[in-house]
Length: 56
Image 1 (cartoon, rainbow, N blue to C red):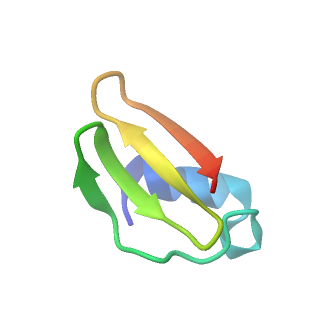
Image 2: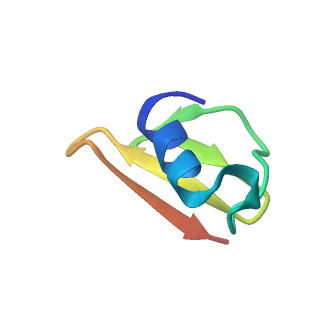
Image 3: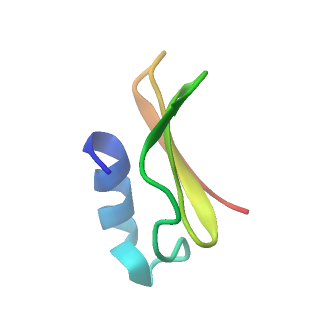
């Protein structure tokens, strides 16, 4: 996990956040990069360099 995704997870409180622990490594998708967690995901959008986190 790198860059903006890591920064967002840290800002949320790492594994103590609502996301929990990572379930995947960071991977590319059609929108940019994403990391899946126990209870949600963090998505980095390459088109506008923004990051969002969402629960499942």
